Length: 259
Image (tube, rainbow, N blue to C red; front, top):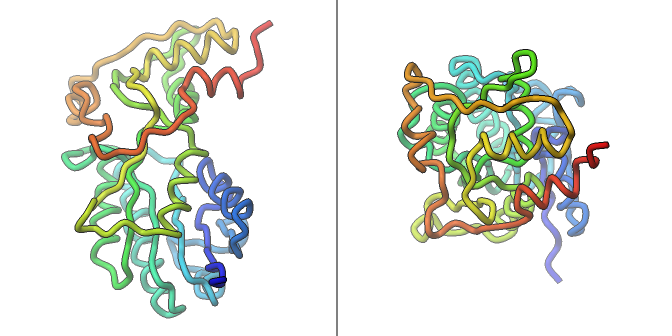
């Protein structure tokens, strides 16, 4: 029986990373889980050489809380360079990294930062497998929080195919174990089982929680990515893996029933 790979998870305590760690442990891998809380900073490189000692594969599930394009771009490009450099020194075989479906033409904000992240990753010394995912179920609550003003939440018009972070974690681990040749599918994708709008998902979430919040879908003419958000560009390609649960199923399982 082949020896299990030693897999490191960057951003191990985050919205996605904690699920990646859980899936790896469940499947019997030797896991090195780290984040800034452990003294490992992939943006500066501090602690990274020590963390990657003896590691075979790195899954990068890290993110930045900032949606500001410059802040996010600086984080992602620096982290890509540092993971390549430290990984090469440590003898890492490859990187597996999460990105976002449909961002090829992104011009602003977080999506443009993730596109820059992909481009920086593909310049590096190590082989890289990039999994593009739809927006997470867990993002809906964040979007509602960002847009709430009193009893109204303004949510950007967006067509998407929401997917659970746990399902994305499983797909990342699958890719770590069995990489897909780039000549077959340059960017594997994962999305949820059905198309939805972010505003409708937000309305379903606040209703399930019993919150007295009215959701208003917005369309920002000043956003250079508005058309991309609204015209279905962020929906999955035909080759995408579709994975449940649906957003409604996820809400029913994770949100306490309103009293």
